Length: 376
Image 1 (tube, rainbow, N blue to C red):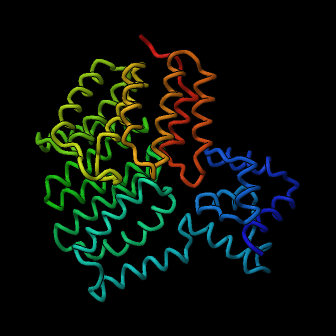
Image 2: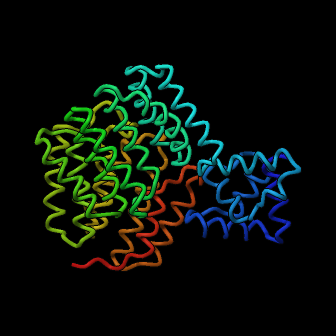
Image 3: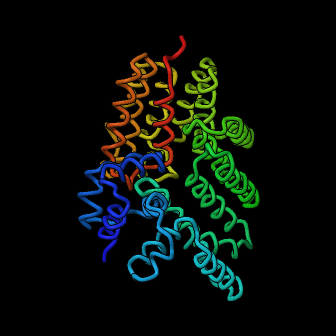
């Protein structure tokens, strides 16, 4: 029995239609999924649910171990679902991997870790948070046994920052905890660029999400104080601080920071790399500006930024096109058309395959649904 057949059997055992299962999954995950998707892709076994959806399927279908014991495929389902939350056996494997690297004095070289950073930077732009998180758990377990000189701390700081982004900043615990540890690891690297970048990346992540704004400001201020040299870290810090300012209602400060950010981008923006989380090319700068302008209620700037972003946005990054569509939804809501704005944003999110959804997109949807007309 395949996973698709198992989903259908468990759904029917509860007396649920595919529509009912879709509703329950959407409510639990905060991420929309349709009856048609369940029918066409999962239950027809044209594709398997991602680890993110496996965990929620296990929860909403209330699958107890006693029912699963008699079937290998059912046990496989539970094992895959449990792995998304680091089951004890998985934790055991991770510990063994980490200690093995330490005891045998083996593990990837500095150059190999640099290659991994490049790969993660590209993969983050197109893959779901759950998949990135699972891979990072294993690599961080190994890397923590190799922290014997500054270059390894630098690699760890950047990977820890990426790991923090796989948690919602709104929970106020896990994401912030990892950003703090990443900043400390960056300090141990004794590398100014890394120290600024880690703090700036934390600031823009939290500011863009509209989460933990005092922490976003703190990281931004630290990054800006560390160095006045134009860099991607400083740019991220300034734009993160701008998002925090507008969300607090301080539009004057936000506008001033936008202009400062533009000047830094002119000197430090990424020219070559277009598809890495470690880069800020022209299209990505405009994604930052698009949301800022929508939050400011500046329709002209928002539309200009969205058009500029779309002009150079790589086709292999559909998630960011969804961001831009949802910014238009926020713009409509902020102008007073709440119904059409929410409908437009939801349509854009639904058009993106569920496995491509990010925590940031779900938080943006919540912001749009809860927004009211912008103050003048």
